Length: 182
Image (tube, rainbow, N blue to C red; front, side, top):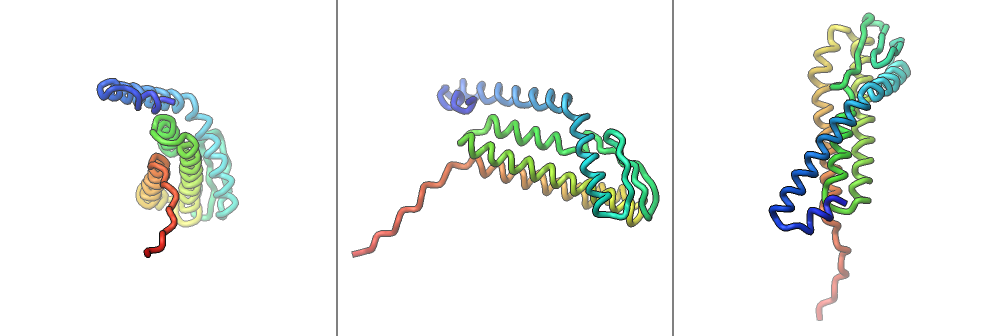
């Protein structure tokens, strides 16, 4: 769609079209983030609470995007805020999928795979934070969140970017059969 328009223009027009597409992508992602963040974090908190309650020994009660966790190591409240959700990276993936060059089917399949990776990984990450605080020690919750859990998030985002970057590569030509030498 936009990438087809960008390819047909002269270099200056192409640069302006790319810049305009970038501005549209950023503005759309910011607007979508502001509209969706409250509902998105509440759903992620609901899923995290269910997963942490299923896998750990904690009793988890959800209220909106907050979790009241009662475990062997103590009781605490965990807030799944905007920065803890997977919404921003998902919107980034969708923005790139819309405006990147290449086959739209391939870009959307990659965007779906990257989105599933980001959401599932984030739910596992936050559930792990809940279980560390509930089962091991509530005092270890923040160091775990700021250390290994954040490193896990960085790896997730890089993996999603790699999946999406793969989708923009040109398709490989089918292999030609080898000819016998005479």
